[in-house]
Image (cartoon, rainbow, N blue to C red; front, side):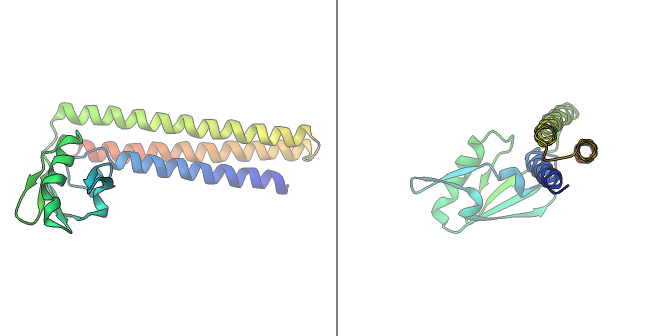
Length: 187
């Protein structure tokens, strides 16, 4: 059952990759607490090249409602401020002598509910991705069975394992979404 195991291992890897992508996507959803991942998508014009913020400055969280950015060059402070304010993150960067402060405003109840809805939508998108992985794995196993490379009963067992992996992946997506919802609704 070597080829079927290869298909299942590949499926497992792709499901793990999908779960990792979901975690990255949800890290960008604001919870009302300071999180450096919030600034991950911000690109700064560094002498004509758009560079990720974390490549031109240190980003740290000093308290639950404040992100502090210390650029390696003081000349970058106004550029960083402009990039953060233009990113549409719902935060307002405040320049200082050597740092840029990004206070994280508390979320309103309405905004929290919007973020919960967005979180559920992202979860559903990733569940669909996992189901697509199942379809691909199922087609591969059926191809092996039809081609005579895999016995019929071994193919059936492999399909059951595929379904078990998919069920586990979807359960993990539900857990990740539930944890994010809990974070969002926590005041």
